[in-house]
Image (cartoon, rainbow, N blue to C red; front, top):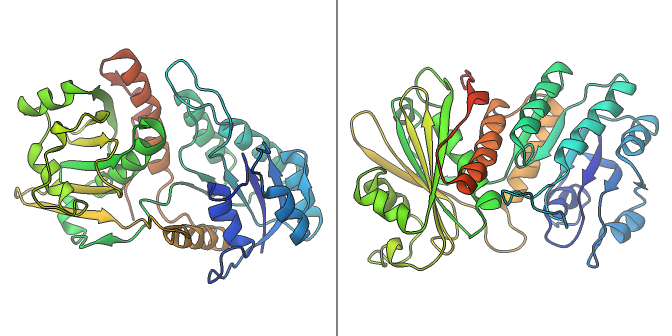
Length: 364
């Protein structure tokens, strides 16, 4: 089976290299099921390796998304599209959101498929768009075109150490995810996606999100002192990712600190605490209906070749082959809009409502 690959850039260790590179045989030990039939790259940085890789493997590198999809279909058939809109030289908007061209990539992909009367599965890396209205429109367009869709990142797909049974999640109403880095949009998204992968498992499924609020700096710890967010869940979530049990409390660090609080319509709450050097993996804790606290960690690999991308790429391949998404696409709409609105909340310094997230779904 053959796919068209579309990416912002292709260089060593970029997301395109991590995912498309595995399909191209650039990672010994990974055995791809899919063939890359054609390739489109939006940018060519000084350290680009896409041109040489495509030339060496005899893969057409085309000038537009339309040509990339059309070529793949005409010259052997097209069975899926992989879009990697991550990394590259793109400006920030007034709220600090990186203006990746994911919305344009998706629109041009859907237009090209419609011209060919094709409805092949599409994978799009990480969140939908940097703008809420575009994220919603992308989701609606995919649904209107009856296109099987998978999005998101590698982190929720990574193995989880000592993960409790799902039945503990069904009556949970409070979750906290630990994140790291000073880049809230790029890294906080991973945490929000992990959060939603947990929250959607509660009894009755997802029933919608009312809004999100972001705090930063000293305000985070003052809110903790006033019990506006759960200190015990933070300490529990840190256990799997801190080598020293009596390590200093993160409030003692001068590093950039953010707190995202997600207000679910049913009264449940989700929290993301992010600090520059707080951890090197994403971990989480939650409280079940009996007051018991459970914690786990997403086992992303910090060393090359970053084996969690093996798992992600294999999941993408299985999705394209089967045409069945591995989880509800609504998870990606929710986590996309949450990071969009989180950046808005950070800029405005207040709670931001999320009327677009009046969404109901259940995990089968």
